[in-house]
Length: 110
Length: 113
Image 1 (cartoon, rainbow over the protein chains, first blue to last red):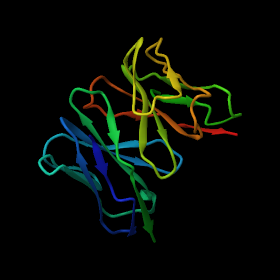
Image 2: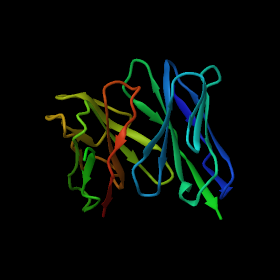
Image 3: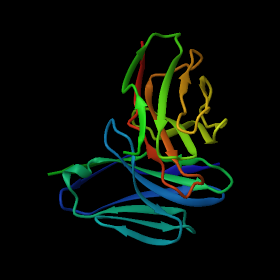
Image 4: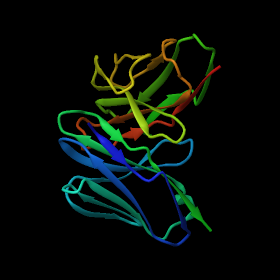
């Protein structure tokens, strides 16, 4: 089967750094996406990892370890507008499906 | 402006009625997807289509139907057979293959009374 795990909720302070983890168990792993979703809105794309290592994009970075079935999203210099849910999604070879985790709700406090 | 649109934003229906949610994209994407999202839940795949006139069931297709007669359009019908239809419905599109990001529409919040 396929399974993706993320923490349900996290809280951090404005200006701080937060790491949101995602672990997955899938066969035929292809790649991993991170999306941001504000309440009541559509998810928006943040990053895509297919090879091991860190991908940096401004304040956001994403890391992947294929051998450990593990990824994290790192958010630096947190701002109030970063309060949102962060969704991890995995794709596998042989299918056109994107498999989403339940998301991590991040609250940024002043 | 290229994008993906869903209408309406909010929809109310009586129990037992079928309802169709629209999804249109002008991104020239081959692939389109329908997801359902319940409070505190991730996205669950209802149906997906990789090409015109072809579509596949996702993980929770029971009680739903779709069509893909045009590349730009992928409407979803929520039938009376769907036991718990009240939810937030999201449509997405992407270029062919799963190495490409999905673009999401703004969503339709369906409430069945």
